[in-house]
Image (tube, rainbow, N blue to C red):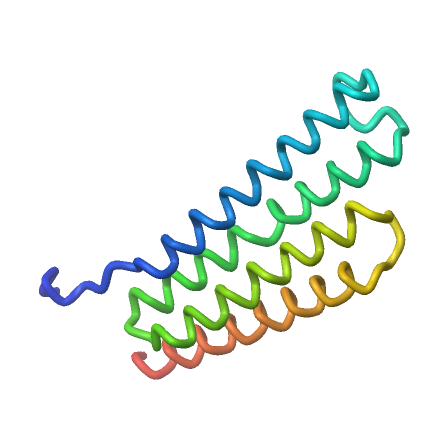
Length: 137
């Protein structure tokens, strides 16, 4: 393989940086809410802490696989426009979900739109990656 032909996943790197920044913000909210409620570990049964923990945890549960998928799309030579679109919708979805979850443990419009947007993005990214891989086998 000619290493000069390898495409560096720069757009994925940009989304990794943005999602990591969001992760740090959400982590700070967990720390702050735990401190305000004298909870050293877990949620202590406090709704405010539970909301913060779930918003942070949900990002951690979903972002890594999407980033891996985007990186593979870039490395295989997929469309940069697709990577930018998928990464942007996913990032916005995670932001909306975090906002929605920070207001209520129940269903909110923000949380619903964020969840659906993230899931659809992940499904499309997986399908596009499969299409690219199958086209090279």
